[in-house]
Length: 448
Image (cartoon, rainbow, N blue to C red; front, side):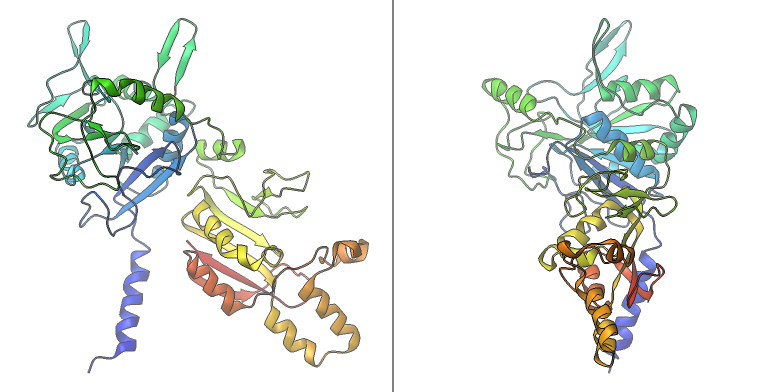
C-alpha cells in the first residue's frame, strides 16, 4: 500500500520547489475598472484563455489609472519579476489561444525585437502602421506575414524584459509611456506612440506576426471588430459571450462608451509609492504606525499627522504587487474579526510575489494560561493586555504601556496561521516577539 503521509510530503516538496521558480512571461493588463469583467482570463493556471503550457507565467493588473501611468507601473512590476518576457494584453482585446506561442516563436527567432499581433481599432482598420516614402499607411494584414511596423498599439505585444532594462538604463528620467494632450502646438501624443518612438530611436525593431489575429471587443455588448478571416468560434475563448461584428450604426454608442470609461487617475497610487516604483527602490510599509517608525519603512496611518500615507489600513487604496515587506505591530487585535480575513487578503494583494508580512500581537492563549495562576495585580495587567484600554481610560500610563485603545478580538498562533493561509500566504512561521511590547506576545511571518 502507498503511504498517504509520504505522498503528501512529496507534494509539499514539489510546491515548495515551485516557489523558487520565476515566471518566464508576465501578462500585464491595464484595466479601466475592475467592476467590469475583462474579455479574457489570464491569471492563475486553471481556465485561462491563452496557452502557456510548459511555461511558468505570472500576471499583474491595475485599474483606475490613466493608461500611461498604468503601463509604466505594470512594466516596473515585470522588471522586478525575474521574467524573460512581458506580454501586454488589453482588457477588451481577445487574443487567440495560441497567441503567446506564435509571438514567442517569432521573438526567439528574431532576438532583440518587440513582437505584436494584429488588432483593429473598433469600427476601423488595423492598428498597425508602416512607413512608405514620406507617408504613414496601414498595410495589408492578411495572415501569413511578418511585417516590420513603424507603429502599433500595445494591446497584444510581447516585449523582452532585457529591452525594457536597457531602456531604463539609457534614460532613467524618461518614462516608458507618456500621454501628451494639447501641449503647445501638439494636439495629442499617445502612450503607445511614445513607447514605440523610443524603440525606433534606439534601433529596436517592432515586428507584427499577422497569424495572431485579435478581436477588439466592446465589453458591455460583446460586439467586436476583427480581420474578415476571423471566426470567433474557433481558437478564441472569452469570459464574455462574443456576439456580432460592430456596424456603422454602433459608432455613437462606442464613442460614448470610450469617453465615459476614461479613468480619472491618481486613485490608487500614492505619490510616494509611485516615486519608489519609478526609482526601482524597495517598498516597506508599516501599517497602523502611530509614531513608531522602523528604519526603511513608510508609515501608513489614517489618524497620525506624521504618517507618510494617510489611509485606513482596512480599506487601503494601493497598487497590487508593489510592496516588498509589510509590518503590522500590535495592530490586528484592533481589527474586527469579521473584517480581518478581508484585510489580510488585501495586504497579500499589495505585496509582491515572495513579499513578506510580519505581524506582532498579544498571544491570547499565553495570556489566559498566565492569568490562571497570577496575583490580583498581575491579573489586572494581563486583562489590559487582552482587552486593551477603553478610550475614556487613555492616559499617560496606558499610552506608555502600549495599551492606548481597546482590542476588539484576540488571536493565538494557530488561528492566525490558518487565517493567513486562507488569505493567500505560505511559509507561515511563528516566533518570539521582537518589539518588547508589554505582556505575552508573539510574532508571525508569512510569505506571499
